[in-house]
Length: 304
Image (tube, rainbow, N blue to C red; front, top):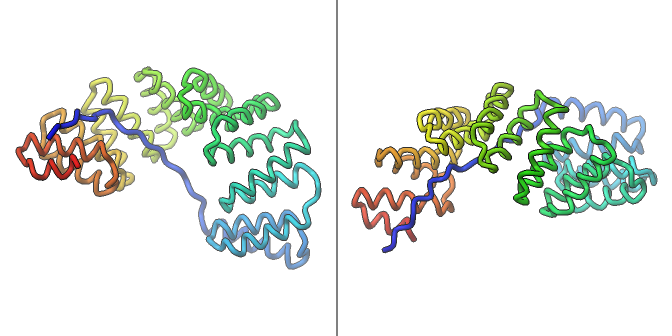
């Protein structure tokens, strides 16, 4: 049996907000009133399609947007609206097609390029997404979200220095955005500028204390700079908000292992694995701690 090295670098995470169902239902009623009077109202069809999709009625959503496609004009704006409606029902292939048509009709349409970049990014075509974000920003350099998303795309390509410039540009435009502070923190962390990252994560959390990803990443920076107690507090805050965070339990397991509190480490690795059974790192680290506890047969099972 060959024990693997302890994989003790902290894991990082993020959170995504959702819309309220009551607001969607209220908007749905308004769209239905419009369509009762004007059955061929293009924007109402698109709006209702998006809302029905968000409420889970995907077949009806597809039927409504199909009606909208049939009556759409040949303007870039109509294709942008169709594209963003397809995005909202998670049909990214059709969304890309509509947004490419919008760009073909109007190459200077910044919104079309921005949404096309978002779709390309979500479909894993990061390199082309970067091109579209850059072209959108060449048309409208004051789009904070485009700078932010371009920064995130560049991060995913490992291009952290160019990403930094775009996160900073986004922050200059929208200084009260928790997501932008967190994105800037992520870039600084990847560049090894942990103290600067800590500042940005703290600012993000001052704006939105519910960002579990920022708590985890703040804890990771504390952990990497030897501030274990502060790291532990950050991970525990994340778990107070959401007890189902495998990464937070994994990171706490690493902290307890470093402190030689093996029983606590075992508990937290096991909780992490219970939430994310496919985590090779958690299985490996749990096996290492079990081996130290002379629980060799259990360790072998986790090394497998």
